Image 1 (cartoon, rainbow, N blue to C red):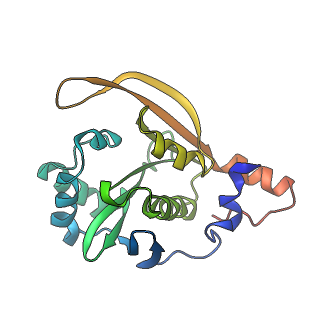
Image 2 (spheres, rainbow, N blue to C red):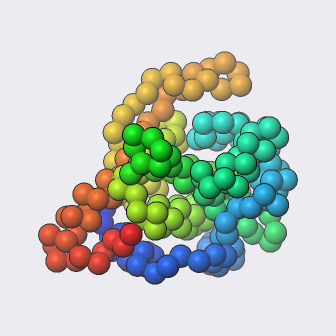
Image 3 (cartoon, rainbow, N blue to C red):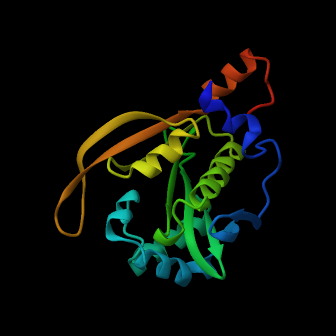
Length: 210
């Protein structure tokens, strides 16, 4: 089962209690991964403004807008979302966010949103950040995860497929960019509970720890 290699701990030990900040070595250099706090608002806004416009379509809202960042910080403060930042030399180069709503009809489901700076792509930063965000979701006891992106963001799709995510839906003309052009969105899902059951059936009950 190729999709369980990551979960079985070959890349990261999911059974350990996650604590931050954490430091990882990547081809882009040493990266600090830490939880986002209200004090990071200005740094994350600068990160958002430096992203190519098309990359902002990864996210439901435009994080290059100050009012969006302010709302984001308020959501963090009230515990509605958790965001991890990848920081290199004091500069934010990536952000991974876990969104969940325990009061909805889907309290067992979480959504992962992630984007990294253009200059560190393909150097392991996105991989490390996605793994840590995934670990946050497991620690929260979520049973299913989803992530969405435009269909042409092939590197991001491949990254999440390597974590065991599978395509579940195609939403045509679902987002409109600043130029008015519409783009299709692909929704990927990961059934954590099902994978855990499969691992247990293979005699690996500790492979996925909540």
